Amino acid sequence: MPLTKEQIRETTKGKIPRPANYRYGTKLPEWELAETTLSRDQFIRQVQPMHDRIVVQLLNEPQPGAIVLTDAQPLIGGCREAVVLKTGPGRWIPGEWWKVKIYGINYREWTWFPGYRRPVSVQAGQVVLIGNWVDLEVEDIALCQEGDIRLVI
Picture 1 (tube, rainbow, N blue to C red):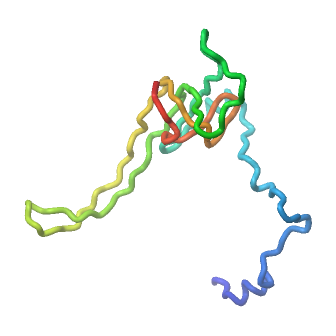
Picture 2 (picture 1 turned 90 degrees about the horizontal axis):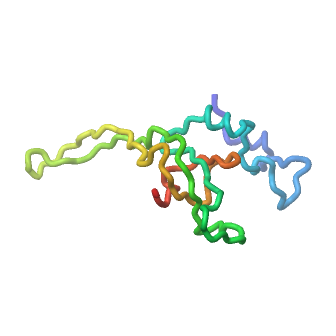
Picture 3 (picture 1 turned 180 degrees about the vertical axis):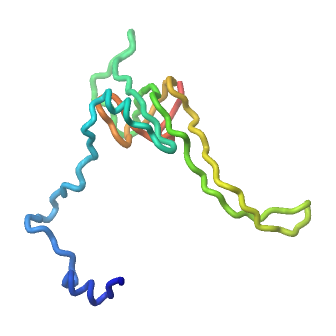
């Protein structure tokens, strides 16, 4: 049986209680970055990306004969070179109802178009440029979305 508004107000006294050690403006532990206990090699072996996610290996080493900038990499607008290691099956596009013309007449009828999976456009082994923001990063391995890819080299 669901609680009434009065019962909820009685349990919270009108306000949500704060922890005893709460200080205004401090960062809560729930806000910390997601971490994994897997090592780099375990992460590559055990993780299978879902939907339109991809696992890439970041290429940090400078190319021979290339000019190396000593400044830190910019956070906004910069890209990182990476090799695609694994890809997910693709994004699921849900089914929809559409009004369509039947036999060229202006009469319209509702038709169900079933959902489908749009495959990922990159394959394992391709070299890509991705943005600086990724979902998860373990040493030189990153998990990101297909939409984070800026360029396929």
